[in-house]
Image 1 (cartoon, rainbow, N blue to C red):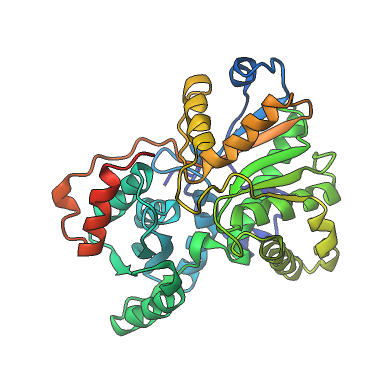
Image 2: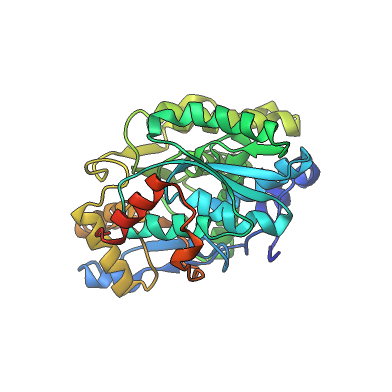
Length: 378
């Protein structure tokens, strides 16, 4: 494993090192960079715009899912699991990250997935997962509405096969999983304190399964309460990439509150549990970038991907990061004048090539979807 760098959660709360262990999958802290070239190109030179490069969490497969998986893999190993199953859409980043990182800690990956609108980025992830050896356990669902049944079926299937399997919720969106991004919030506070960037007033990111947004929301509240270096406390601007009711404030706040209660119990410090109003005051949901729905590209998202490629130099995609970046572009067009941070969530790692014969064993539905995705426009 790589795993360079201490985890900020353990630096702030050393007593959690045993109670909330991390499998060290990523390289932290991830860097921050000012986006001067992008700002100048859009007529806003000198704008206080920065980026948190969580696309660089790992050279194997990066992005925001690595932080959550560090916690969830450690929990699965403590439970004696040998298999770990991710759930979500075809081409899920969480599934791809699980497939690439689980074998590094002795876990066998699997997926319980349903079709999404075909796109090149989703195709790359699905082919990556299917190409892993030994072959992953695959539960192929006909539609997203079948996911609750699929999760139950996967649990029962694993039990019948004696797999000692843990089935994760989509995006790892459970209280313990959110602690990976509480740690990320503390990491950012440390970078602000070192002078790597000014304290951002807003942090812009995509919100899909809610885990990253919830963890940052709680982490920023804790950092402010503990005097760790974020002042004023940032507003989390979560750009919706999944429809109502998945990404409503109630769900994001609920996950953040449950993660706060878990921390308070583990630390024996109820004063570190926020109330809903304290968190809600620093959460903004942007619903205007979703377009026709999850997985559907938008013109402004495509333009944001192009601008990032030209003026920033690392890839975005149209399902998640491109839609959040479109909010950043809109802010620049309005003349951004407050310290703002874009949180990059798509992996920049170069992935192994996958041959067609490596994925030929997929179900007929998956093969049909992959054929459509191969000619789709991202």
